[in-house]
Image (cartoon, rainbow, N blue to C red; front, top):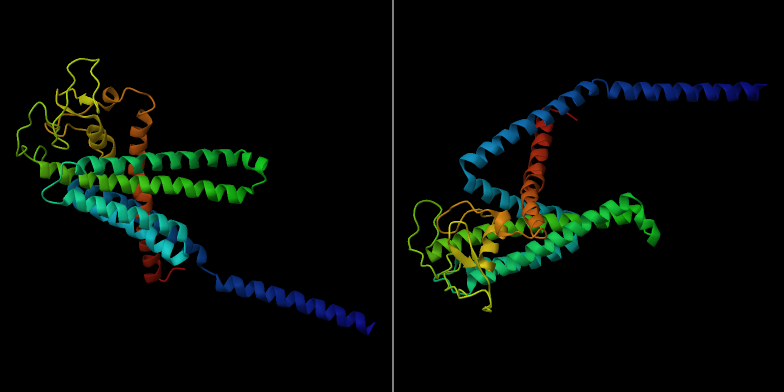
Length: 313
C-alpha cells in the first residue's frame, strides 16, 4: 500500500515537473509571436526597398552596378565554399578564374593582336556551351529524380537530387560569369580596335571588307559555291562580319546591336535554326541568376543585422 502511494506521489511529482517545464518554456517564449511578426515585416520591407534600390542603381549607374554584381558573383560563392570546405567548387572556380584572367589580360593588351578577339570569343563561347549543356543536363536529372527514375539504378533520392542541383548550379553560375566577363572583353577590344564606341561615333571608318569586331579583313566569297575557311554574316544594316565574331558579339557578349552602327540586330533572323534559339533564351535566363547569387545573400545578411540591432530573435 505504501509502495503504491509512493509510486503515485512520484508520478504526480513528474506531472507537476513537466507542467512547470512547459510553463517555464511558455514564459521564456512569451511575446515571441510578436517578434516573429516584426521579423517577417522587416524581411518583406527590406526585400521591397532593396529591389527598388537595385533597379534604380542599375538604371542610373549601370557600369558601377554591373561591376558590383560581378564582384559579388565572384566573391560570395568563394567565401561560402571556403567556409564549408567545398573543394570541388574551389577547383573548378580556380581553373575558370585563371584562364579567364589570362584571356582578360590579352583583351586589354595594347596594341591588340589580330588573333586576340578570336581567342577571347572562342573561350567564352566554349564556357557558354559547356555551362548550357551542364545546366540543362542537371535540370533534366532533377525532373527524372522527381518521378523516381533514380530508383532504377538503386540511387537514393537525396543523393540523386543533390547531384542534379549541383550540376544545375554549376551550369547557371559559370554561364553567368562567362557572359559578364565576355561583355567586358567585348567592349574593351572593340573600343581598342576603334570601330565601336559606347557613346558617340567610332574613331575609325569601317571598310566593306573589314570585320568591325576583330578588325581583320573579310574573305567574301564571289559565289555561293566558293569554299572559304569561315562564313561571313551580313546584318540587316548591310554590315558584314565573321560568323564567329558576330556570334560571340551577340550571344556571348550580350550585345544586340551592330558593332559599328549600333542598329538593332534581329537575332531570330541571324540564327534561323531552332537549335540555336534556346541559347538566346538561356542567355536571358542567366540575367536573373545574378540577383539570387550576388544580391540575395547580401539582403539576408542585412535583414539579420537589422534583427540583431533591434534585439529580435
